Length: 118
Image (cartoon, rainbow, N blue to C red):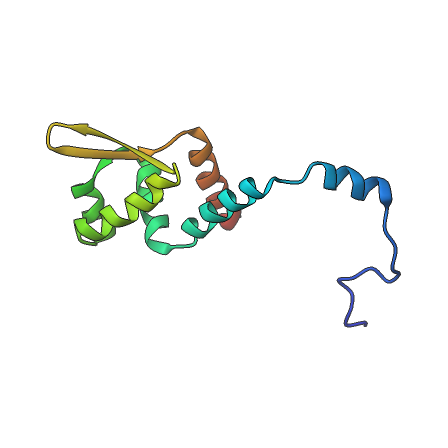
């Protein structure tokens, strides 16, 4: 068995296919923004926060209890997620409530979870 089973056995390329795919590639700005989102999703604390928020809107106090971290540390992580538009917040009196930003984030999270569970 060859050690190069994951490569083509012959050097060739398909100009039409390459042209189609290259014509549809991401802009540098899109690559940068997606990279930032996936870096943020690479943090275990942020995954825990997103999972909690995928279930329901929570205030910072409750989130800190769910992930067993100080409000200060949770707020820092939420700021990162908010700057990337992964979560949003609303104020109600002296309370600050967080939720996932939109259906795209909910889908991204639930699809990733479904992928690892199956």
